[in-house]
Image (tube, rainbow, N blue to C red; front, side):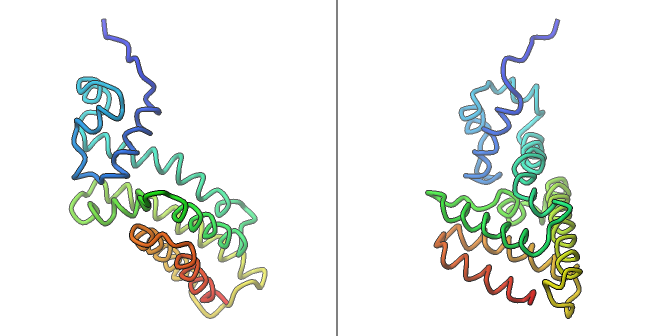
Length: 193
């Protein structure tokens, strides 16, 4: 008879996310994970397979929970320019309010792994595709309401806003000054006018 798991899978995934987010994938040891997750090595391997499979599960969890909260306003059917502004306001507040800025898990992972880890790259691309679709729909609505210029391709603008979001995360890791981050947002949003 199989032994019943004595931990909450979602809770331990959140704990693993904390470790990967702070240390990165390569610098995180299995011992770091089991110590922070509060489970044994055997439980980690039985439940998730290995460190890499756990990391992919963490990226999926991030997309389902954390990213969904971040994108909620942009994915609203009536999202337009104000939703884009609110998204960036939330990003600036989040990045500048951390005691030690850990940046964005997706951006950190893209920089560290996307070039040589196809499975991680697929998961990260799925997140970026979702974000691009959300930006695109909000931009299309903003254009239809006369809130933004029609001089740029909306897909290109959506991709530019993803680049801005990623750039904010990278800059905040060394300079989480809210004014610096807001300056970057202001310039990016001025390109929509």
